[in-house]
Image (cartoon, rainbow, N blue to C red):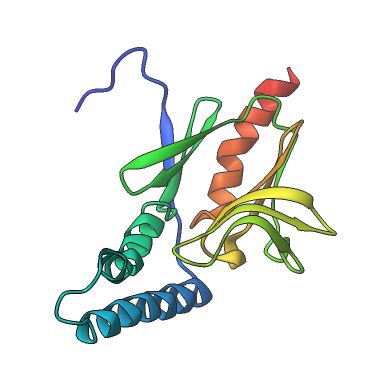
Length: 176
């Protein structure tokens, strides 16, 4: 398909899953589906509404959590798009001060608000090295730390070096 003359070029990166993320997601999924299955198998003849809701709550949590999975990233113009199943999160990169590949950057982090490994490591976290940061991560061995004037982001693209090359163009235009 030909590119539109005014279209802003974009580069996409996938978000590979680590063994840790795969294990946490599988274990949590099995537990949720197991609870639901046991409730369904042990249900009385005419279960009350709350019992019926509890049977469906666990699969609902699983589906809702899957919608927040991180599938990849797109750098387009001065925007970083975090790609999710069926939707995306936009992060404006204006004022980008630095971006670096730092695989151990999240060590010692505590989760302030967010998801600690069910389909992604996402939300607000804090550690001594980065301070408070927002993560959209799937594999901590691919950690890229992005410094913006008012916040720090952590993403985990499949090709960190190529991702940094893409962002370096934004830093060069910002310094002019």
